[in-house]
Each structure stands twice: as C-alpha cells, then as structure tokens.
Length: 63
Image 1 (spheres, helix red, strand yellow):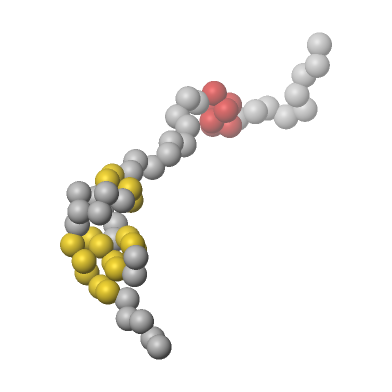
Image 2: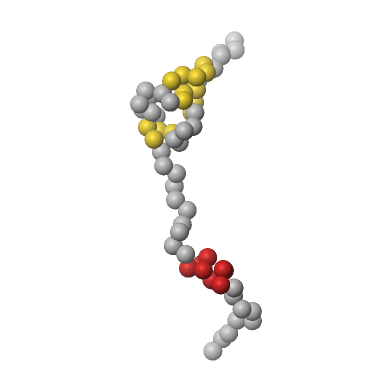
C-alpha cells in the first residue's frame, strides 16, 4: 500500500476537509433607482453618485 513521504499536518488536512466555502456577496436594491449594489457602498448610475438613495455627486460634462 502506498504511503506518503512526509506527514500531512493536521492544519492542512483540516483545511481540505472543511465545508466553509467562499460565498457570493449579498446585494441590496436601491429604493430610489431600483439598482442592485453592495450594501453600505456608494455607486455610480447615469453620471450620478448615489449613497443611501440620495445623489451625492453629479459628474460634470466637459465640452
């Protein structure tokens, strides 16, 4: 029967056997625009920066 050349540490063995996997981040929907975004983060939509459903910054148009 084959045997390993080196002992596998308990930490390495347990990391392989774990069931805690990476999960996708949760998204929330803005009540004002209906756009999905990460919670507690500002996001851009149509040249405007929204945070908590309110416009924070409007992008200037350079002509």
